[in-house]
Length: 207
Image (cartoon, rainbow, N blue to C red; front, side, top):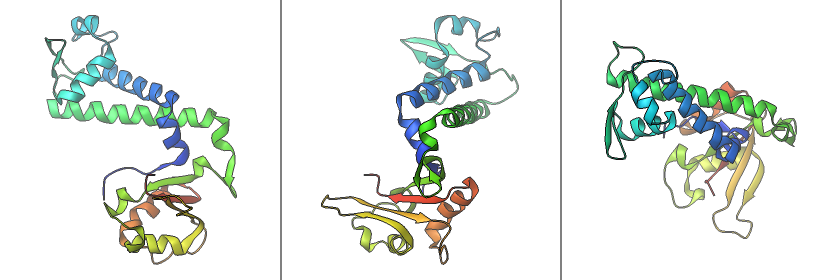
């Protein structure tokens, strides 16, 4: 199973939207500004005068190094914290970006009216976990041959499969009813759902 963090339908939709992409870019800019003190600090002032924070973030992420190359020019970045190692600096950059991104997206979700409309009984898009089964059980060819899909189909309150189209296979499980004997591979999903406080889980194949 991958290490992905399962998110709600609302979170996924916002993240993939144009507004979401703008917010993600903002989180990357903010993370670079934070770690390298680009807006007011002296350590990287020369680099900051030539490159945007977003360009610096992208270059550091791409190279996995504080030694970057942009348009044939080489630059060495210094973290705001002088005693940390390069590996620690890279971890802080990614952790900061992830935290800022989550904060910006969650704030946006709370202000978007469309995400607060019920699409299932007593559940909005913010209360439905979105789970691609490929992230849970790995690659497979036929869903009916996957034991976890069998359990999901039995527990589902909503079915959407075949429907005259190849590849459509998705089910919604209501967490309020009959969630027992959960297959081992699905336990992290149920745990994530309970932690998030959602009412339903949408299982699908990513199509």
